[in-house]
Figure 1: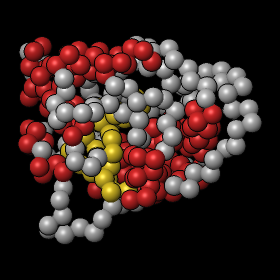
Figure 2 (figure 1 turned 135 degrees about the horizontal axis):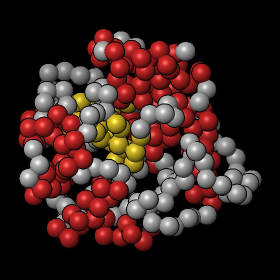
Figure 3 (figure 1 turned 180 degrees about the horizontal axis):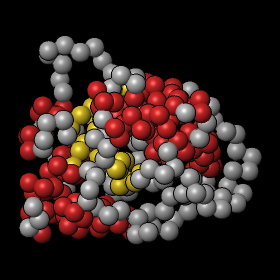
Length: 273
């Protein structure tokens, strides 16, 4: 794969002695993560989930265990710095997207949507990602009226009390109005859990700045922090395979409006079994 290295923990590579002597951490956030994952599935529009960056690697791992036959992918890009993506970094972003099957031509011809998932504060990452795709589609002269139905975005936001004056990031991003109604949605998450994933959790991989991502294609880090992060990730995949956690994910789906649709009812039954 022409993407930075990360262990495949669902069909695992040989981890060797990486976890020897490492204490398996207790995922104190498990209930919140599983429920949030269920709501992400329910609001995905039956799209193939693509987790942007590293913040939601734990959701990627949990769902990889719970739904090993479902298509899940990671787009390991980091959009730091200015409000726009530097011109010289755009080809790198496109190459990373193409490596997981996301190109204008592929989007126009796929049956299911692509649903991008990430933690969201102000929405800048989604804005930059949409801009890259939008410019690319125009360059390739692919059919926007078709592709607009193949793009969805699910933002994981901090849970707070809602009111008519609540600030919602998608209402301030003009590009969201170019997509069909319901294509940009949110799932709220407890603030402590959101902060853990977004700001505090030790990640299994480096933060891939676009101008340096090729440096990490075959890198295997073996320091103590990486081994602890690996133990956490392996444990989450294992937990995702248990009936108890699968039912927690199903609980997040229960009551969602999309449960009237056959694809989600099938998924709900699969997780509840």
